[in-house]
Amino acid sequence: MLLLFTIKPAIDLTWNIPIFSMGGRGFSLLHITGVFVFIYFGRYLLTNLRISAPYSGIFKIFILINCISIIATLFIDKVSLIQVIDLMLRILDSYIIYNVAYIAAKDTTFDNSRNLVRAVSIGTFIAVMMNFIAIKMGYGGLQYASNDTYREHGLYHDPGTLSNIAMYNVVFTSYLLHLLV
Image 1 (cartoon, one colour):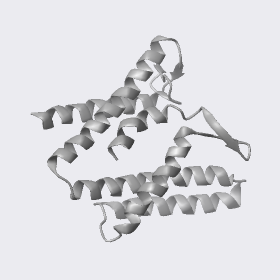
Image 2 (cartoon, one colour; image 1 turned 120 degrees about the horizontal axis):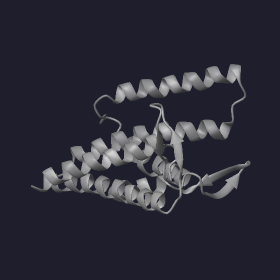
Image 3 (cartoon, one colour; image 1 turned 60 degrees about the horizontal axis):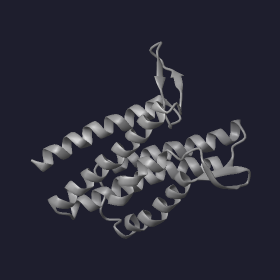
């Protein structure tokens, strides 16, 4: 879990670099990581069915609504099976990580919790620095934002993701500094 949270933001930057293709669709390291999370961490969730993170019922409703949405879309438009699997893996991986992180935190010591916060802080810092360097080197680009301004998106698909990662870094680094005291 610590390794995943440390390297995941950097892996997210590979969203558009296919490693292989199947059925005319390219698959990146990000896709492979999604399958890994589903299989590896999904088994922890299956072995701890009685333990449920707070508000995971709302998460299950969210998953159900997405399934209904996909079924409804089948009646209106042509849907790619690969895209459906990709979407559902993203949603299910979020659910799995949410619950597995809760299980890990529930049965852990303060030092392990601090290590988890440190891993998120380091991972988001790596992603922010990689984007900073990419922006300074001229990679990425500007994208029109909703408030009549242009925003830099760096190596991510949109500026909002870069902003979120930077904000996560501020939040988790601040929390880590508080825990270190």
